[in-house]
Length: 179
Length: 179
DNA sequence: GCAAATTTGCAAGCATACTGATTATCAGTC
DNA sequence: GACTGATAATCAGTATGCTTGCAAATTTGC
Image 1 (cartoon, each protein chain N blue to C red):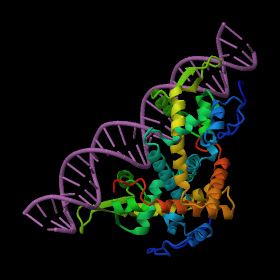
Image 2 (image 1 turned 60 degrees about the vertical axis):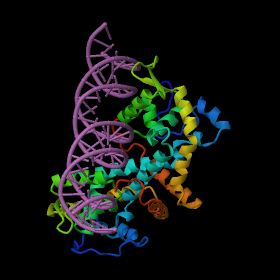
Image 3 (image 1 turned 180 degrees about the vertical axis):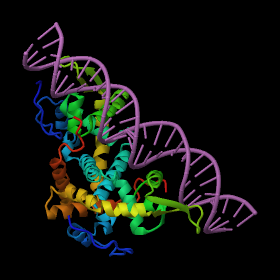
Image 4 (image 1 turned 90 degrees about the vertical axis):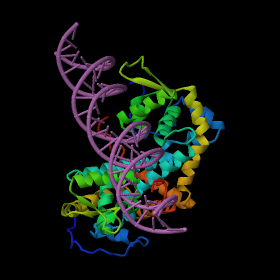
């Protein structure tokens, strides 16, 4: 009706005609006029959104979130571990990890008991329930990840993964002041 | 998909390493054994975490979040717009967009008034405060994005951006069933 | 033995993100 | 003019993730 911008959600706003920012940006620096689609942060957020949605879709039957899945996986691969160790492994805040684990414990996926060696810490362990869920969810989780990368060719997938890994490795302790 | 194998009781596969795990995981079905670092979802979440942290660091003085910045940017580039248009532009849920805008309005960065043409919708507009903040924050926001990609070489940056854009474009309306 | 560091728990608070229900409005139609 | 369906915004509710600060138990270093 008023204007036909029925296009895709990430519509490039460069041809809307009257853009007050364009005048300013013309003489200023160029960052202000970059479309959202040219900003790493925007793309990263959308990517995160998309993968989360795909994961939730695929794993709806089990009602597991990506982070819960990460925690269970880490626990499965590392064996019984302290919370703090899992927290580091999955790159999750200390308190958030505790929250996640509390939910997982409530659902009987894990058990937590005080460590005999260091009674400050609690050792989390996968229960039978947790293990069987991990096995059951395997294909769905794999499918979610595959679907996320589906739009890319083999080379692009490799490049994307490598680039992401490089950044993640370069900032090992960001967002984790509270260890 | 492919059927499973034997749920190995002990799983010490080649641990970290570079990339062979990805290839194996993509074809085979030892997904359960892939390290977190070989899962797109894990890397995407960490990437998101990292960029958010860097952005908040750089823009701490203005106390603006990445999403708020996106909304302000879209508003600046599109001119006065309905909430729903901004929602689509930034790929954000309509209620989340309303939340963000409420906070922005509370801080006088934007103004919202009922549209005279369609009294269902509200037109959001950047205020002077908002515009000046956008200008002020420009360098910091740019720095945050630069720092995020800093670990990569020029080619890798281009590849990463292109790959992310491709995925984002391929899933235009994920996570937005409620429009 | 005591102080410092560590691990966990708890709680309040903020921001993001989504769902579902509801209200108001608009645009057709009969 | 009333009815109907679509649309824009809102409200209520849930969940996640991070921050800060504090407390308790415990280990470790001196």
